[in-house]
Image 1 (tube, rainbow, N blue to C red):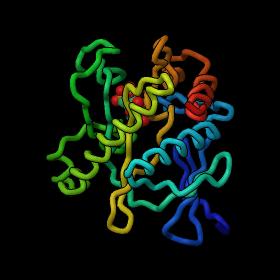
Image 2: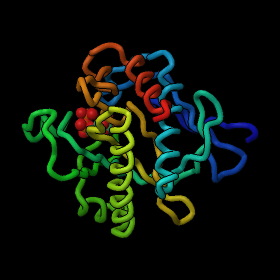
Image 3: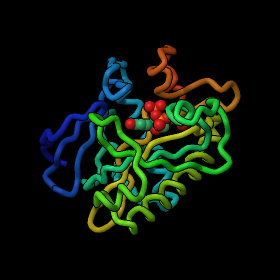
Length: 236
Ligand code: UDP
């Protein structure tokens, strides 16, 4: 892959163009942010860890029939991905009550949900990612009903694949956020899957191994991410 051209900088990643408009390079940064960017810190090596963790998850999903934007890792911090037209609807998948759901519905964190919950949020930091329902999605033309059916099927299937895989590593997948986009007429899973975008609890101790350590000032953030990577890389 030849020369890269800087396109965009987000909170946790920088995006570069490539000579082929169908492909982009994602560079994972060390910056950690929470509360829509209000809390911000540099965490040494976080970008390297997330790049590696996300690659493992994308490869696992691809192997199990989920089409993703991931092509390959290019370096410690960079991955080559397919260029998506991002659908501005964040899909949250929940197996256990935590975070905003616990606050919103007054249900204790850790409560196991009888059925997997899917939530849709508008991808818009200024508005604090407000929740959407299907009426909003179609009325605002964010995605078609056919696309949403495909997206929700992919989200639920990804949950099963990731949840079962993580359990073999003694990690409970509490909840996570996915983003999708269009590429040559196909819906692909995009963005990242990492401890920044998922809640991971140790299956034995319940210890948090994700960005809640940063959000809640629990310390040991990169150590926890490192432990996640170590467990994912360990052969069964
Ligand atoms: N999440 C995310 N980006 C967001 C919002 C949520 O990656 O903009 C992830 C978050 O890390 C968690 C899950 O989605 O794994 C559910 O988050 P929640 O709605 O509880 O919000 P939070 O309490 O994390 O703000």
